[in-house]
Amino acid sequence: QLQLVESGGGLVQPGGSLRLSCAAKGVDLDRFAISWFRQAPGKEREGIVCISNDGEFTNAKDSVKGRFTISRDNAKKMVYLQVNNLKPEDAGVYYCAADFRLAWCQFDDMQFWGKGTLVTVSS
Image 1: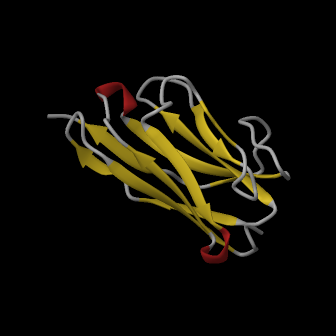
Image 2 (image 1 turned 30 degrees about the vertical axis):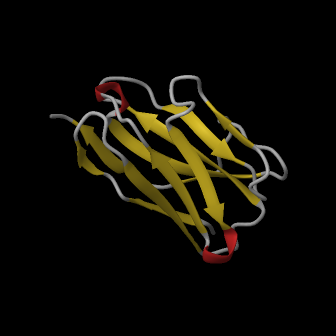
Image 3 (image 1 turned 60 degrees about the horizontal axis):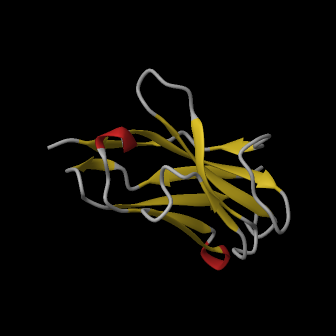
């Protein structure tokens, strides 16, 4: 059973940066695509960026392109989300999720979820 644990959230000023981490436990990560989701207060959870199992393919929603970067280290069972130039609308709970899929990534039909880490953007 794959378990995911997010960390790295916190309070940051607009324009600031954070590095979110997603740690995998239980099984190897190298056959799972990983996606990051965000749920802002009062809104539905949305997929924002994903990475294929081998790290060769990534996809990001337009709202975060150029500001958010996803990466992974399968040997360490870690996936990272570097978030730069944060805006108030980026605030919310950030979740990582895993999908047993090779060479591609997407935001539907995720099989495993973490419990999330809170990002607050405020001056």
